[in-house]
Length: 345
Image (cartoon, rainbow, N blue to C red; front, top):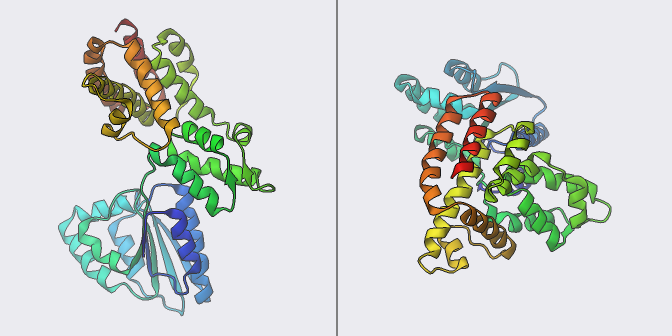
């Protein structure tokens, strides 16, 4: 079985009369992989009196350990569940050694019936040499959510849980979590618990329960950048703490690059909807178009075409310097220098 939807995959696994021998979960979300592991173990215990649950971390596991665990037949009447967390790391190591790769390719065709495997691939694909594993596996290949898909995803998820949601709440969730879609499910789970008695989600419920200060800070930074309020932004930046500076830099780059493209396309007499469609931003949800357009208009009114010629190479340098330095303090300093440089453009 293959699926690109986590919740559909979970439902199928719950209903499975005969659990699969192998599950390959191509996703990075720790909470989701933990849920799959718990359910898989529960299903296996329905069919076997004893299940030996073995955990390996691909980052610090060598090839011989992995091979021994999946190829060894237990001495007693039991089965084993081999859970390889962060499996991409060890498969990359195996794939890099021709000799080791060959005996893994051979032995993956003869995995003992007593061995069940759960492989987490951190969003990467399994190396082509090991595709024989996929023939025996259930596969979850979760696609990352895009901003334009958020309203449809929210409504679908709410229906699956037997809830209703007002349109204003869909709009607010879509706007608040467009900066980091991975946090959206956490927000929905909190709302399902909070609104359990009525099974109805209103806009006010989001203000009550989804106070994501990290997300609000990201929106504030992007809005101040768009409005070119550099002095105000430099005052608040040192107070912020971000777990993922890479994501923040990516959003800043996206803001300027999309604004540049939008300006060029409009000079070719394209309308707003056509511009958004050409840039892959178009959606039937007008509030998303409106939000993106408003921010890009602010950028284009506050930064000249001449400024863009300097901003683009500066964004490339910003990304490079962020990757070369690993500390939060250095990331804050590098980002501060970039933002300060915009004041003179």
